[in-house]
Length: 114
Picture 1: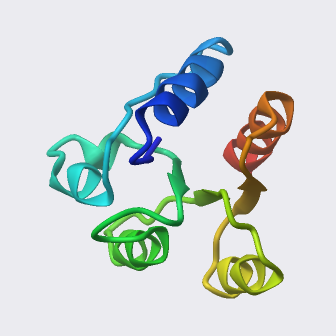
Picture 2: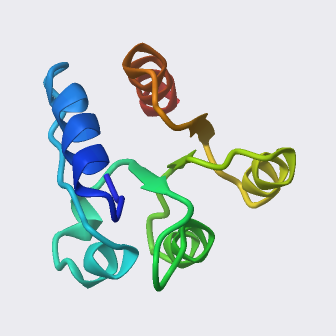
């Protein structure tokens, strides 16, 4: 879970943990990329609009990993253009903020089954 907003990060992490998923929360894309344990991740849920490296740049970095993993985007400003760019760039899913917990859990479950 990558989001610069601590309240969003904690709420979504808690929701994901409620279904017994292991969750690591990162305050920025750079924190995730600097984590020596990132190779153990199976999925990333990331905000698009973040200071520094945004979600799209994070997705491009993840695509270069030896074992790329799916990325689900969340965004407060979910314009059609942002949604289309997310799809075009290969995001595994997209949710707008405020994130509906049930939709998030269903999407994560669906993506991890593939």
